[in-house]
Amino acid sequence: MIQKDGIATQEMIDSITPSAERRSKGPVAVVECFQSIPCNPCYTSCPRKAMKELIDINDMPQVNTDICNGCGVCISHCPGLAIFVIDETYGDNQCLIKMPYEFTPLPSEGDYVTATDRGGKPVCRGKVVKVVNTPMQDRTPIIHLVVPKEFSMIVRSLNINDIYDDNTYICRCEELTLGELREYIRKGYTTLDEIKRITRAGMGPCQGRTCRQLIMNEIAKLTGVKPQDQLMSTFRPPVKPVKLGFYAQEDTDNE
Amino acid sequence: MNKSASVVIIGGGISGNAIAYELAKRGQKDIVLLEKKFLTAGSTGRCGAGIRMQWGTKLNCIMSKYSVERYEHLNEELDYEHDIEFKQGGYLMCAATSKEMEQFALNVKLQNSLGIPSRMITPQEALEIIPYINTDYMIGGAFCQKDGHLNPFHTTQAFANAAQRLGVCIEKFTTVTGIDVDNGKVIGVQTDKGYIATNVVVDCAGGYSQYIAKMAGIDLPLYSQRHQILVTEPVEPLQGPMFMGFAHNIYCQQSPHGSFIMGRGDDEEPKDGRITSGWTFLEEMAKNCVKLLPLLKDLTVVRQWSGLYNMSPDKQPIYGHAPNVEGFYMASGFSGHGFMFGPVTGVVMAEMILGLSPTVDASQLCFDRFEKGQLFIEPSVV
Image (cartoon, rainbow over the protein chains, first blue to last red):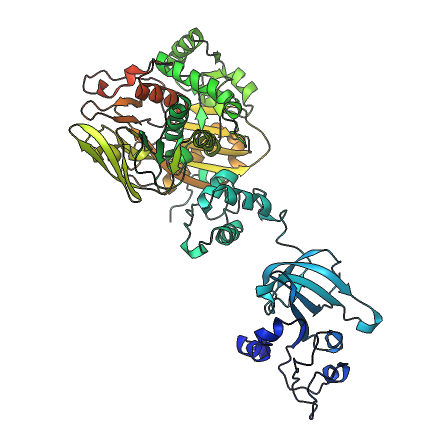
């Protein structure tokens, strides 16, 4: 519910998604404004008059995608940070997303980041190709982020910590990195149990609480076998680490 | 999957992979190894992974010495990309009774005569090796620096990788459902992924060996018993050798990775094939460990698990072939020592199958020793 969590529903997104044909032609603005509020800078800022005139200032904006060329001027003018420009013609299977970003620190050009969806969940790895932050943007910098094309309508924000980095620790107890994990999967260790035995991932104090799901997801990505169809490893006692001395105590009181 | 093979090996543990490698190294082609789950899923991957040369019979001393010497150079021999983590921290055998001391003295004499560098130690000398032993419970012991411990997953994988490079076909997640015998000869193996025609089957299915043999109509005098083990969090290196006591019923060692691995035997353990974990073990193990090695009381246990000992009537392996089914070989009934004997198992079985003269004469461990009443009694087993 957008009133509760601020995240647009799929239905709402569908209602403002430019047609596939239009998206295939080049950059276009996507205005994700779903509330009747007295606000009109998107309309007044557009140099091409691509935004339909707001007769009542409470009207919701509508983009004429035939006129819009995706220049992105409106992005910084929207006080609700609701406007994005997507360009699915950016490269082979890649798409460029221009998004407003008001967090600090800002990413730098060339950085790899975690591209997230509207709710902040990681989606994929993204590459920052440009950071636009001139007085024109009035402290609402615009980040140009490149992600795989299929995520053009999913990725809407970023986290500067790149969780898809090869050096990211998957198993923190036994220090297995993502890069190493991928290498093992490629070599043919394609079940959680095999990864566990050859790398010790999941054998440490947390007993796989952190890494189990991450490893299964990674196996799914590289082999196509969904986590729910993969073999689960055995859950073994004790549930959490307990000192030997505790078990060795004589029972003092038999209730 | 291959429709035919010259040799089908059943079991993807240390024995199966070592046999596959040794056969291929000797020029055997078209070898298929079948494993129900993944490599080391059974007893190999669940074992304590210690290796000792301190035995009480000549044959076991010779076999374990051979294995240790192979393990010392296995990384290089098999050109393994990782490390089998062989740590020769020694085995400190703790004697609790004068009877045990007498046995150890005999053993050490035998071991020394075979070139095994073991020696008797006093409790005082034991403290120099492991400073936190509670010597109240020991009257002496024996020590051999060349004994040690290695990583069972990597060791098995090292054999498997080398075998695959020599052309061995390893089929994981493949279950054997039947063995076809015609006129007293093995003719093929049925699996859930298809049929493989073959004249030679090697049964090294660990805790499931007797069931595999049954498929060929062979009764093995074996049963599988659960053994439990636990592991602690990793800590800085504290303990060089494996600490072991027969009367005290304990083995406890620190792996190179830092965790302590310890286990014990228990005659009450179930023999129905279950590999679950039990509370009694945890309590008894902890009491024993804290009593004998008090410093370890503050280590936290992160996991316990269990595996199957494939027990034979004399607690010694069977290296042999079935007398009434031609082409059926077995390397089973290791009774808890299959991993440490891995290299010798590979060589003995490969040479037996190919009819080559044996590097190590293990004919005393043949299958028909039970019928003939010639049990092979080893005084030093847990």
